[in-house]
Image (cartoon, rainbow, N blue to C red; front, side):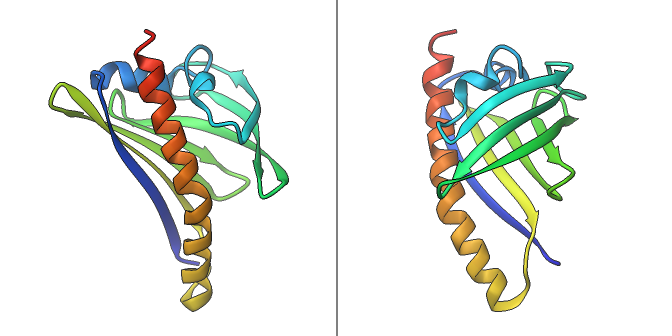
Length: 147
């Protein structure tokens, strides 16, 4: 099965280190930036950065699905990855300096279908995830102003 990728980016008017801290702190900050589709977010182990395990529910199209994830930091301070082993998917947060602010990209990769079915799947999943990521990026931009 080919890997599919859906992503969204935004410029955030805050230093990259601060924005990254918001994503990586699963106890204090990360739950405060999640869109309304997320609920029951709970840290199981750890709490900041690599090794943190967590669970949450995600409501999409009226259906609720439970997820269990673990955080990895391939590039601490810049690149955070959440892997969901049961799903075979991952969501990443890339935070890069951009002038006095940050360029943030949220992306999800998952095993998808091939051919035309895969193109339709990628289009449909993009319709769901891109607005959710835009909301989360907006929430981050507002939240960092309070810190």
